[in-house]
Image (cartoon, rainbow, N blue to C red; front, side, top):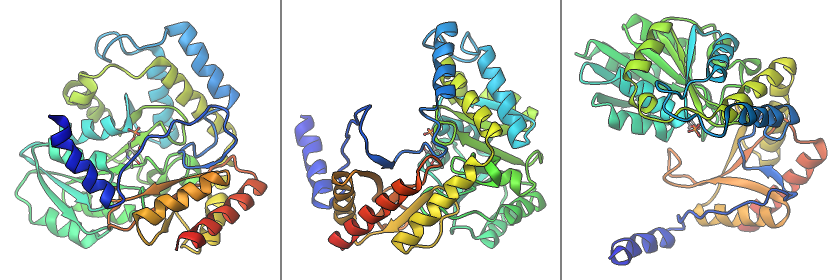
Length: 373
Ligand SMILES: Cc1ncc(COP(=O)(O)O)c(C=O)c1O
């Protein structure tokens, strides 16, 4: 039955070169990694690893229940306080993933009385949040502040939430945050900025909202993942205390989900402490990203991800395989994970890459692109 149902779908994907496959990695492979999101190179940092291990010893392996039952530990509260302080926000609330943080805040603010205004390039988690929110949704052209202003001004709903990313996942370009915040304020709307790619990267690590002087404003809300720069797992919503209270009472992905594990909290907190103690780490990401972009002859990225347009999905996969064979792991973006149908190699710059590793990676990648193009 499932073969008849799903077999033709799988064949259609395969015919278009769009099949996704899982590939387990070995703990001790010696590849140069440009595919993972460990932007600051902290996932194996002894300080982060030992903090996670100590949390397991102290608190056990799981958080034991949802946050409102027994799933909130002192570590959750320490992490939330530290993240709020670091990003200049009044409060923070941790979720068990960045995906759920986006679902939680958008659905808790959404509903029939709220217009959702979404940049056309936002991450899938915000797209899915719009689908769940029971709100009218307006999708506006990428980074088009005038279009945002128009839909806000013409709305009938009393409330509105404008959604963007500070640094976009695929193109690694920046949103015009000051302009969006001004338009939102003038039209009695809230601006939600997903800083998944900003935390630890932009604004000397504090993120783009902080750098733009927008942190702490009562109409600006931020979401983040703990899985990239903070080398852990989980997500967070940052903003005014009144929002945090609302989320604790109304965000279903918070209320009905088991709390983030203590080990994940401790790892994220330890990574944040390393970032604070070593504030030069974000600059190293930008040096590596600039080197990769120059080698591949693409415009410089604002974040850690350098996207290299490819002729098609098959060429992308083939180039990634050639890189792997030559000791360099790279990622790929293929439809439907791209906003414009263009497949790309996804090269993620990390703070921990040595100059030799970067030289080697650039040579391998350029050669692979040449072979498939
Ligand atoms: C922009 C953006 N938002 C949200 C997420 C989801 O975060 P998480 O992986 O913690 O669920 C990601 C990526 O993973 C992302 O790139």
